[in-house]
Length: 205
Image (tube, rainbow, N blue to C red; front, side, top):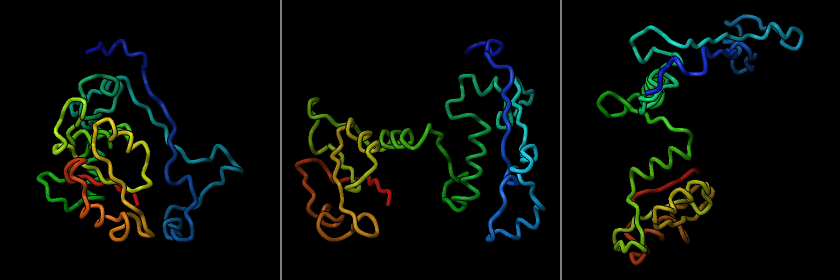
């Protein structure tokens, strides 16, 4: 691994805006009363609430989940993700989003560079690539359901893997369950000459 002493940054500094910077709406008037009066930044720019954040080059703590420094953040070896960020997100997901998920140890998380990167990892995990040029049997070709108007980057992520992409019609509630080109019609009339039934569905609405 690279020598930490040669990292080109000594510290990382930033000013962050805490919630107190913004005046709550009438819906949160009780919170406004508890937090006290706010200073108007238009009248006094120096009065805008902010916090100073300083990340040191090296932190002495041996606990990687609390070791917030450049030595760790810029170094290799954390394939799972930056430990403090990973632990925070896992705790947040378990506490706020999936407190009753039936897995030992609670929910887990996978850090990505964004939705498209996460979607790409999901497709790679749950599908097998198929190629007619390689001579793969059509009965092994996997199907993929999506809405007829879908996020194009998602479709372009699936295309190179050779999946049979089948669009489903939309209605006022999202992906149509019934009617022409609806989910029932698509599945009951599945064309096995183009591959096996789908096990993945991509929907936004």
